[in-house]
Image (cartoon, rainbow, N blue to C red; front, top):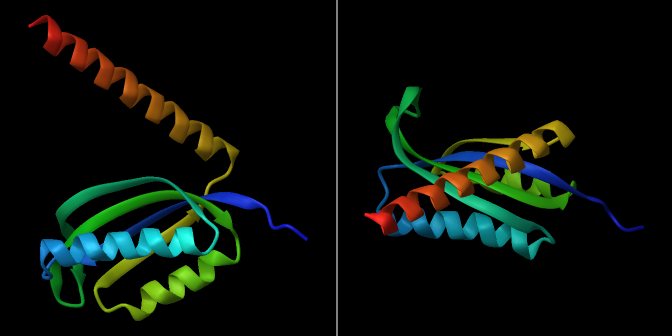
Length: 126
């Protein structure tokens, strides 16, 4: 029986005390984990280092990463377990996107692309 792929949004916070190279390695490891287990990564959006709303493990800052991917449902508990074990990931949240969320994501993505094209055209005119 083939398993259906669902669309997920994963947001996680990496400990900002580690070096930039280690943060990039962490992001690539999470992305690779999804790909190795039958998932397709749609987009990885790194928001960067930001102040946390409240301290987590006595830390005030974290490096935020937002990832959209399609994968079978069995991957999510294993991915979350791997993130739970890793001491450099402070928090994570995985959401399964329903049809309305997918439409909203695609609409905002196309809107950002149109804005980028307009800004590029404006730069060329100047």
